[in-house]
Image (spheres, rainbow, N blue to C red):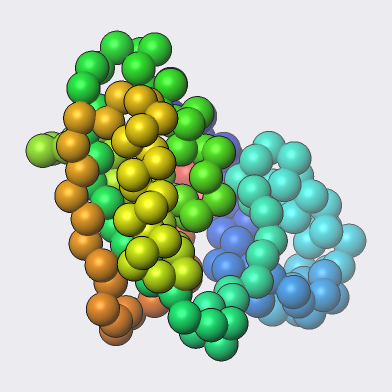
Length: 166
């Protein structure tokens, strides 16, 4: 787990606004959070430099690009040494179809979010991963039928404890 970065209420306001409006200008951001542009820019750059802001990106409407399927796969690996975890993680990192990978507690070791053009493509991908012998003991997959909630913003004001930013 990475170390906690110190920040104040203005930094938190910047982060909350950038989650919603990542393409806003520095002047708009400064106006929104109640700072002048120069200090606002310095704060934003500092948060980028320390890794608090990792990147900026677009929320793509995949359904407008064509047919696709989103699948969550629960994966159990057959051995639990640090080497085996690294081997699996490095292997899944090579597949662009794997959008997210989480090492989790509970009845399986990893939860993968996979985006593929269709079910057949997804199945071929899983067959390829099994043949690659990257340590998969078993997997169970759940096909997303619909997504009634797609919250792209983290609850920063809840996560950031008050004692760190007051």
